[in-house]
Amino acid sequence: MSVVRDLRILLRFRDFRRLLSVRLLSQGADGVYQVGLATYVVFSPEKQTSATAIASAMAVLLLPYSLVGPFAGVLLDRWRRRQVFVYGNLLRAVLASATAALMISHVPDWLFYISALCVTAVNRFVLAGLSAALPRVVDAERLVMANSLSPTAGTLAATAGGGLAFVVRLVAADSDAAVVLLGSALYLCAALASLRMAPELLGPDRELGPPRLTSALTGTAHGLVAGVRHLAEPKRREAVWALASMTLMRFCYGALTVMVLMLCRYAWSTDTDGGLGLLGLAVGISGAGFFAAAVVTPSTAGRLGPGRWIVVCSAAAAVLLPPLGLPFVEAPFMVAAFVLGLSTQGAKIATDTIVQSSVEDSFRGRIFSVYDVLFNVAFVGAAGVAALMLPPDGRSAPLVVTVTVVYGAVAMAMTRFGRR
Image (cartoon, rainbow, N blue to C red; front, side, top):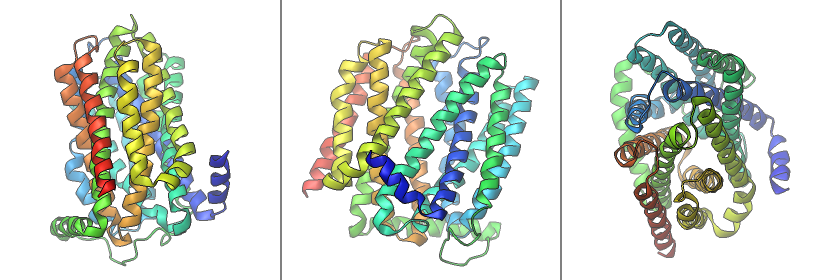
């Protein structure tokens, strides 16, 4: 298989192997931790979850990234990225342990959300740093290949972590706290793996010491303006279109995620354990779609170009979603999970490649942090729209049609841009 051959080529780079190990451990821990949060919020037997409650939880956990994200970018362009991985993962290990303690203590929900917010806020620095550091460990010729395999491997690690979390929850007497403690242990492993890399290896190029708080506050505004100007230059127009397209596709994926949560909880199962099992199956099948994207994207995007590959991915989702999703039956919906996993991850690989190849190294931290902010705002906005449109059992034909139209609009817009 070409993906195996490509992986063997990339694994010859020692520093790529080490960065990849940090990504796998870190995102694997994310998968474990996120499943622990989801099962605590959505699938606890004593909770009667609604789409509005899910949207509220997503807003609490994700919207603050709109503030954290820009700071992450400016600081990533000043701090050594390797140190961000070491201390960021250590901090998340401690905070995740605190979250587990709060679960056991049955504290008010707002205190639990603050703890979870702190863990996920640090995640912005780590993920943006992983993307910004990738060009430092592979050559330009293999950057597309690395963009295909590395983030996808991280997504698969998160999926595997989620699957492991489901198993641990069932074995440990439905203990969400045990799941979160497992995530804490994996964060600690990611921090230790980061120590295998030299402190200066991952950049950035400019040697700036950690800024003081006041300089960081003022530097953020100036840095963001400079980053936006850099992105707005004519030769980076394709990156802007790719980011806009990926944001809309993330919106679609977020709306369908809330729908699947509600369907698994109420429409497809009569008890929380059965619903949790169906959700785990859907996550696993979507992860298989991510893996398929890693297999087909390098060769396909190489022939078509990253922009045209985004068109193919969004058009495939628009064509296949209605017949698979509108029956609201488990089996077709699981097929849809695979299709959407493939199309979403395929488009993301292409977008990452376009942005990385268009943006100078000294701006990558800022641009990828803005990228993360767009992702989270789109996901929360999708959850809000889904909360307004979804009935209690999760079956909503208007939502499926709306998402289909958005996918189609992305395909048409990118096609017109490509022709120009």
